[in-house]
Image (cartoon, rainbow, N blue to C red; front, side):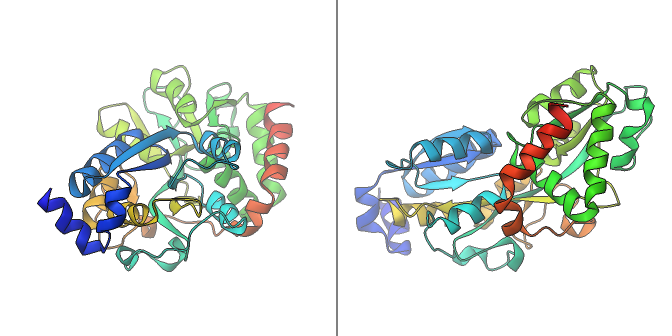
Length: 319
């Protein structure tokens, strides 16, 4: 009790913490990271964390359904565009954590900051018997026919960011690429795990647009897969952490954000094979400087989300 009180006092939050013993966090995976952060935060502060974990699409849908009676205090999304949209709608509290000092400017905002970062890649099963692909367009080759999966951009914020990024870099050629993949019998079975599992099991050979940190972890665990980031360019998927304006537990919510962006919190992020958002924390995989990153106008993309998803469905799923 004494330790908790002293820590709360260091944040200037003794009264607020006494009144708010639980905060509610909605988060888009990885589930193990959310659990680890919640457990460590509770150990440091004595504040319980009530977690709801789902895909970005499901998290956003739940927030939308609860808009008249918000339940969440803190939200972690897998899509930077979702933070842009929520800020524009006036749903977010302005807060810049002191622990965000070493986060690059393009990965933080006055109302949110990146918790961690993934990139989009191809994941190839090295035991599949098909050639190792080097770039996105390689997967339109006949050798990969009926052997490609892709996460659904409507269910995966990161997959949506990839489609939008490829369009930004390639224009109409990006849609021609996706059409060629559809012609090659690419399947879009659902969110990220649904696209990766058939490749892990050997039923398919390659994921187009896999969230890389998941696959780095599976490769480290002994799976016969390789993460391949095309030299022609890919998108990164910063995972924003943000506080809702509607929170009744603002001080505790700020303390949670501070913990996630602390050295201890970012070390937990790195253990999941995400890139830490802080440049002074070492990761377990290639970092941003090792990638050819496509620059995407997040505001413009967010405004066109429905349009882009509709065109993807028309081009790939409902053709």
